[in-house]
Amino acid sequence: MNLRKICRHRGALLATACLLLLPACKQGGFDYDATGVLEADEIIISAQANGEIMAFDIEEGDAVDADAVVGYIDTTQLYLQKCLLMLGQKATNSQKPDINKQAAATRAALEHARSEAKRLERLQKEDAATQQQIDDIRSQIKQLKAQLDAQVATMERNITGIDAQSSAQDIQIAQIEDFIRKSLIRSPKAGTVMQKYAEAGELTAQGRPLMKVADLETMTLKAYVSAAQLSRIRIGGKATVYAYSREEYRAYEGRVTAIADQAEFTPKTIQTQDERTNLVYAVKIRVPNTDGLLKAGMYADVAFADHAE
Image (cartoon, rainbow, N blue to C red; front, side, top):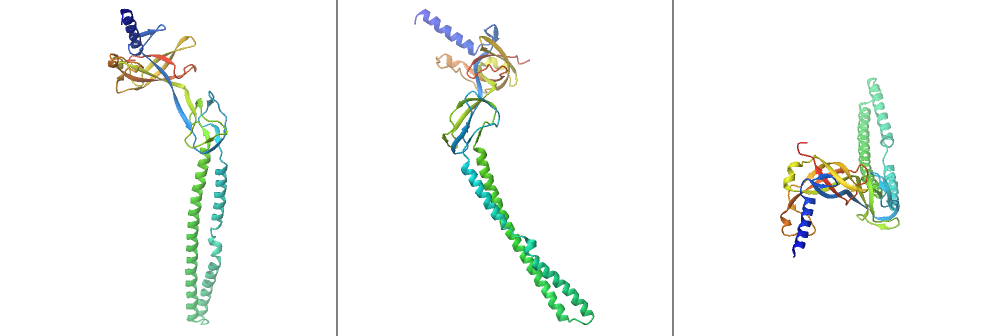
């Protein structure tokens, strides 16, 4: 390698090192401590049901609200199952006995026997009724009371069994309703549709990705700093992020949300043996995308506030 190539090679290494590690580098008339790539919080929304996608009216780039329904998967069979279960539950509940009505005759006979016993007791005092008659009516009262207790206990057991069966049907209906709710396609958080993986009319299965949604209101800048810079950085500390957009650098206020507790080699596509000795720490900064110009994948510079601030 001649002298010119050596100088060119060392100059490239020096520029890369300044970009990633050295504090107080300058660009665009401002000082910065590190450079990184902006990332967006992304989630993949997958199907929670099987069947044909009946509607999926959303396109890439559209904004979605949290929990807003953007489509649904066919629920015809689920609805029919629910109707069948509800009819079965209605039939089950119709078998529940009415204790008051079904025990009315026994109760009436018991009350009549008690009245007859009182009448005979009065007659006995006048020597118009025998002890045998009183004993017979008291025995009859005892038998009727036992019969009434047995009837009520039997019907109460039947009601308990029917209630248990009806409760099981309630659970089955709730399961079907849960499946129907899961047939609705919705985003659990507000954001922008980055990719759409399915269309209306297609068959889908549980777990198949349907779309990717990203929260573009707040971005995350992942940068790498040297060990010497760590003393000036703390979680929750302020940081100023500079991003180049619309032919000018724009400043955004951010907060440090994470600092790696272990060092790693300088993340570069091509590394020389000397560069492997450059250990850095990953730092994440949350940046409000106040003007909507920050995009995932953009490079940005960050200047950390002094620890004392």
